[in-house]
Image (cartoon, rainbow, N blue to C red; front, side, top):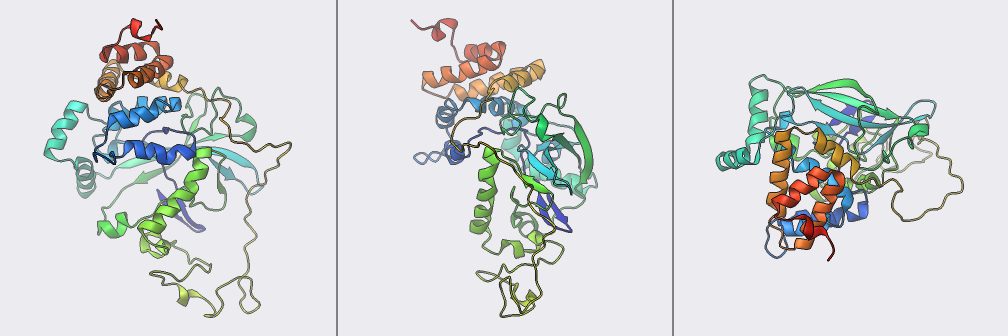
Length: 376
């Protein structure tokens, strides 16, 4: 979601699920490589991504959610959304509140089973785009309520998980969700390339009063999206209509490919600040929040509250019997293609640690018994 505010553009970027596979940003490219087609066969391969995930226990939560029918939504209007990462809100006193956003579809979450997916994709694999487009065209404008959850810095350690870990959800029974807005999609694009393909979203597109948190995965993603925009849309992507702020930008970003800003400058020869010849001064009203660090040691090590399996188990137990059955079938269908039995068994142990019934059912679906997990 891109907000065109009086103080610039603010992007809330997220997923249709509230968590992610990894917490270590250095593993991001490895994760993507494992999920992409093989460089040898050019085909996505469960042998590759489960080989990777068998060494990433924190992925258990995301895998448990993604391999349910939530991974195959009926249409875009039937999915919820989440910022996944926590951010900071800063008030005019400089006080910090940690926040996480979630979008809840007023159409409800509606998904397809694997059997329904097979039938649908044999007819039209673009069903989600078609469904959303037709709904809007017919005047059935889809809506989402926007909720925010808030944690004070003094309460950030009061949970059995680390709230700034992207593999963790913020449970609504522990951290209240407050409705702050409703979004309505009230028209379709006139030109899809111009209005959709050309848009640039980034977790680093922030406005005064909003800052990134200490979430380690977020810290890396603040850079990577801008890099992608430079490659995909060029160095002046912020001059494309759909990406331009509604208020005039006051800075000296200019030149290079497809630049069209030089006429905005008060003096053609002055493209820097500070200058004695142009009355353009820094705006000192907005500063980043103050962080006081005492006895700090900077190091590369895992967070202390990993708690990799608890929320995966809680989510599994919250599912209906039908949804649990579909999860087991979906997981065993993909894991069953893995030829390395040790990888299969390692994944089963993760599911077992999340929930005993969950792990045992996946094991049985793969043809394992108790003796396969007992050292000789």
